[in-house]
Image 1 (cartoon, rainbow, N blue to C red):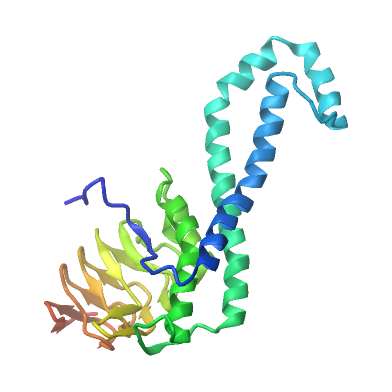
Image 2 (cartoon, rainbow, N blue to C red; image 1 turned 45 degrees about the vertical axis):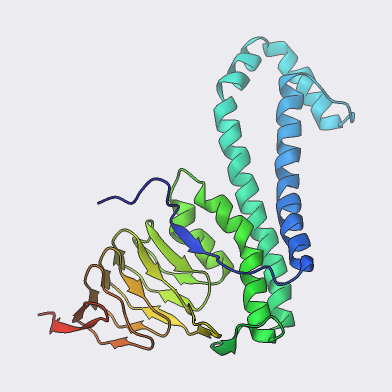
Length: 267
């Protein structure tokens, strides 16, 4: 069964804004990422409407050139206008991701990401910076969720912002954390799979890495908990929930809530 259209699968970025400084960082990511798009649209509409208020030399030369092929140039320019909008969106996404990577680099240099059990108190530096990293990733991750094309949501955003997703991974309809997650090549996933490297209790945040080995099979609506290791060719049946730090060996088939061994796959 397909997930409801109102659910936006993709990177998990649930967090608390740790301070007003990071609200400013989020605004800067949105603003700086938009500047190349503004420039691109300025040039596009300047050419379309023969408008060059800044007196750019290359614009003047180009406008003189296309004056010889009017009105055909204007007709073609309006026909490709939808492609221009799509290009503007993708330029904005790509630039926002790169700006977020820059701020994420600064944040990681300030406080290195760690696994462990941390009190849910912003006075604790590990909990504070865990939220800070996720808040930095929130805007570009939201932009990517809006894309009508899958390649950005499949691996691009994850590999750029902290997770490691291999080739030919069927993670389009999954929620996946953006750090401490490694998924190797050829992993198949069903709809509404959730792979999380964090877990909340009433008082603590638990952060542990997750590893999904090569050519594993993850059924629909599976929940993979922090610390889970699936070795190659392992299987998790639909609606299974792994336990913290669960280890599934090569070829083993697990199912249930909590997940337990059912049998071993035959070679």
